Length: 527
Image (cartoon, rainbow, N blue to C red; front, side):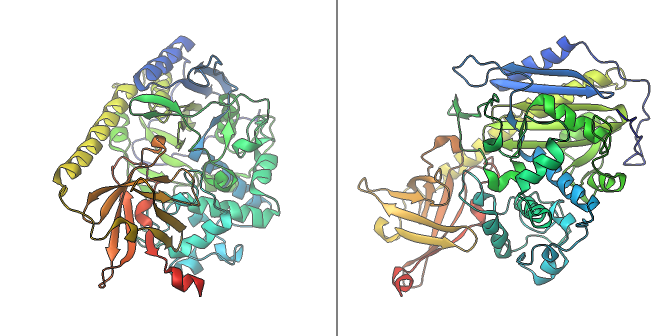
């Protein structure tokens, strides 16, 4: 293995210089962190890999693949890594830049002529770098319903949808996380390379790094591989769920499945600044620097500032950049419904931690932070108990969300009735970026919502007040019930409907609030 280059400090003020090589804690200390987190957050399984000074010092799975089963998780069990995949997509583009086939400052329309944003100026000036840095002006999570949950959308449909989203901030003015533009980044890879995004990612990045058990999507994983099953809490009971799993469409934003052992190879590759384990430079120094150069200023989480002294945070190309006890920190979290992941690197200490679990829970981040604290022990005066910190924050958020829902139910006009008979609300509704949904009055006297694009989005409408209903999704694992408020024409006919999540704790990828559903005039449609 080639020697590791020393990176300059990301932020000039307040960074500690590295002292002697870190002393690896006893593996039993890491076991204790993981087991405590599993007990605190109720995760069926957690898998962890830790690297230090180029060596894998810990690679282990804890728990079971699926509740009710006996198969144990180990360091080779595959987990969905969610948005940790974004760094791989950015690296794929860096490979193409090294091939002289593109530049991060190329205009997107020069590679995808059909690309359009709502503002013609933004369309003309939008660069590949903008696809990767969450500063487009799009609202948070815009278009996620096109791919989640289990939505039947093509990448071309996502590309066409972008023109319909009105910006909520000025172009390049602020950070708003999105997935859709990473899908388009994957389309750039396809257009430039001449092969599918999945094939390019695997052939040019995963396999050369020896990550042979990993795949760009679940369906492409080796048949013999052990795959963790996602779980989610439904009314206090843990259930398995397939509804968050992503197909090929979402691969550039969050589709990769990988093992903890192979993710150790990825972390070493990043800490070696683009050099593989056998000493081959896969990404040039210049293009690698692009990947970790801060672009978009982000808000530093209060808990990271309070307990790790972080003062300035930013987003680079598929990486979050901040500090951890004065050390440069490169990290990213990820999640699909039923699995969450976190990866953190402390490059000055040559330390990397990867954690994934098979429950929709907060486990990975505090486990990663607590493990890092074990390695930094003695260098920090006030080590945080990250499991306790995050558990308290999650409980506060849960309680706050419950209060909002309870207050809305208490203040509603329970004696009100809809303006029209229920059959008047039935019919087909269309949104310009999402497509059609249908409302059907069933024999049981209830209106039922159905999305042809996303099968899990099916359920009855429950009257809330006036012309507002609540869609109670039949699949309770979604945990995303939504208000649906109808608007009427001056003549008293149904004109359209708007939606929004009932609880503020609903995952932002359920971007119901971006829908502008308009009633389809069947008579006009037949003409």
